[in-house]
Length: 126
Image 1 (tube, rainbow, N blue to C red):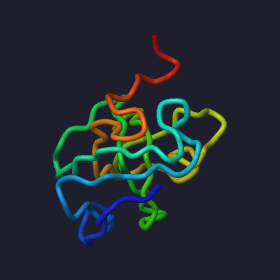
Image 2: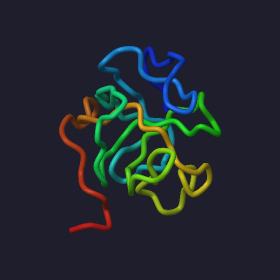
Image 3: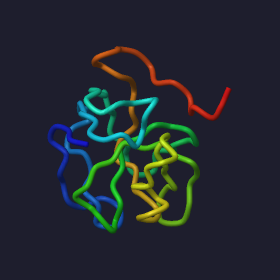
Image 4: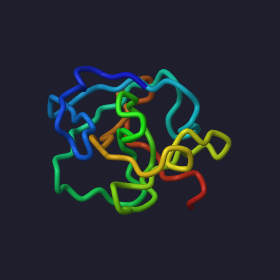
């Protein structure tokens, strides 16, 4: 996952926050397939400290164990230390199952390219 200007010290647990209120993130990898695919461009809005992030929200997050890595995942629940996030692809476990709680730094608003629009619900939900 890569994005625009996304590094500023001082986030929760020493995790960098997003510098600008809006960023465009480019997805790399299959962890969110079929909802988001590698190469998709997503519009992301920065999450301020204290903002509520609900379950099932697709977010841009960092793991305190790997603070330089930005990931696009889906929030499963709020937990001590942040949020439990998982990808929609059950065969890829590069998420909280491997790295523990994540710090959400942005909420995905929608897909800009190649299929503009809102993102679908979790594949396992009707």
